[in-house]
Image 1: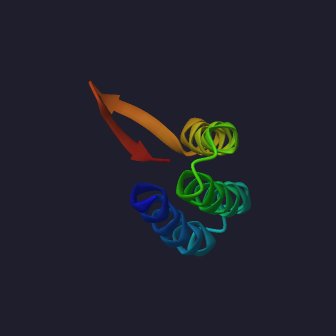
Image 2: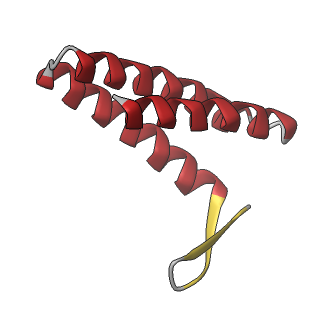
Length: 82
């Protein structure tokens, strides 16, 4: 629960970060990620493994979409924001 809540906070910060850069797609994914993190925390708190798995899948999807669109590899294990 604590980790999911922490991830939700990170997504909250990312919303502002991407808004400043006028990256509407990244703002959308950040908002969706925050919502998925909240769903994950709620499911974990209630020990609902099925809902937690669904929320984790949604959360992972937002990460992947944004990383593919807004990151570039600059070395082994190193990236920068485009």
